[in-house]
Length: 100
Image 1 (cartoon, rainbow, N blue to C red):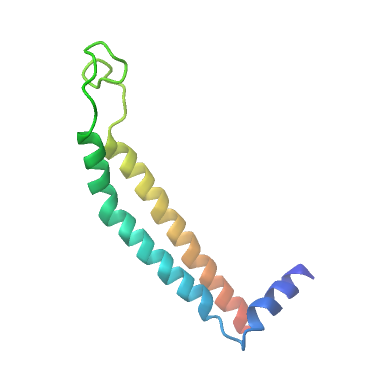
Image 2: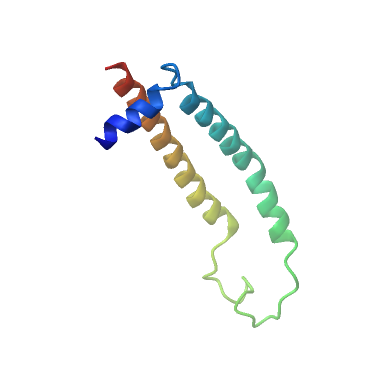
């Protein structure tokens, strides 16, 4: 019953399924912007670090276990790509279901 209502809501717009495609395109543009400006902003933030005491736990020369920005960015970027793939597959399933 719920699936039928969702399908009716999707298909009620003159059988037009372009809104998910437009949403995915906007999401792709945002993802591209994040990939373009993320490393630049991260580098600026790392360069703006205040001078720390030599024995501070936040000093990377004293505490070598601190993660660096490149490792964090690599992890986050791969998760963003995975989320984008899931969204594209979901939209493809919506189209296939709408064709039936």
